[in-house]
Length: 263
Image 1 (tube, one colour):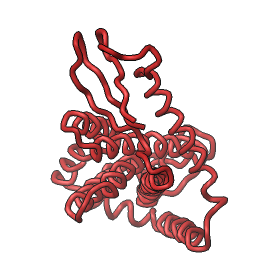
Image 2: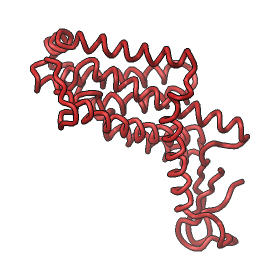
Image 3: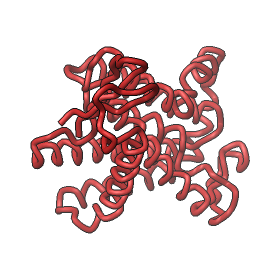
């Protein structure tokens, strides 16, 4: 049911018990907590196929890690002014631009009354935050030296300040791409999303900041979290018969603005 949430000025006819902006924040934080818990517990509920995919992802990462001393110099050796310029353009999509894009989707969805865009942006933001947190926790635990620090050799110093594995930029880029792709029709936007994410990952190796296994691991984390959230929210919506996340609309009220939120 839609309810008017005052932003500024008096809302004619609004009830004192109507939820305000803080209620939206509270509901969002509750969603984050519930989703985080579901992600943490997910491995305990995997079926055989899901466990097989996890094992395959681990095997792929391990194989790439074994070849890192050879692949890193090869990619670095093919760096050029073109790849360096590409890196400058796309690398932000693995950090602040991923969050900015998510926010822009939310704002666009509200402005143009496109619920799909609003949901896409809110889920992308959540995916970036939760996947990024997972990567930030894993980095110091593994303590891997970056390629420029180890002369492309594989060196781990657990619980240190070395943070090469996994790649945070690849994590954020693929978290954003996976949600945008899942919430888009056709193949053009999904292809563009994953292409940009892949270029972010490539650029991190090109710039000697990460090994190939680092960016693949980060990409797997980001994609897994993004797709997990979309699937979880869709399932919850089907079971409840209502939107999983709030549908937000801004409208004019006498003396100010209002926000309509449907939960």
